[in-house]
Amino acid sequence: MCRAAHPHKSSTVENYTYILNEFLGKTSAKYVHEFSDPKSGRRIFVDFIDTLDKDGAAPKTIENKVMVVVFMLREARITKPFRMVKDLLPTIEEEVPEPYS
Image 1 (cartoon, helix red, strand yellow):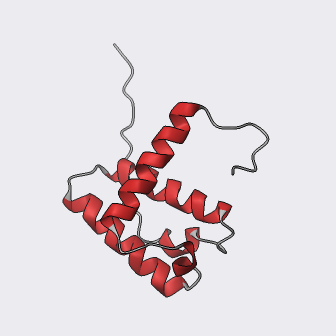
Image 2 (cartoon, one colour):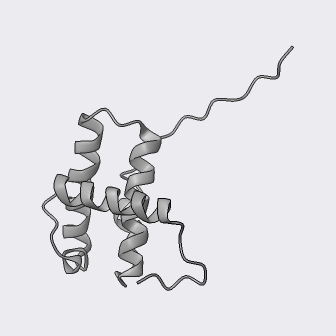
């Protein structure tokens, strides 16, 4: 159950559920405790990121999906899950907006 003061909108919950089910389907992860060991957790994240990349997901999509999993692991009291992925996330090139002339 979410500990947040303001519960998420139903569309957000549906999106998180979709991403978590996708994560479970594309990795070997079955239990939260598998992320207690940073090496094991990192390996699972590598598999997920590689699969998303092979499926043609954009770098920002990969980052968004990984961060949903990180957020949920943090909620499950896994210590510092972002450290497992911070150097695995793809580089996102942001375009500089050009003003209309």
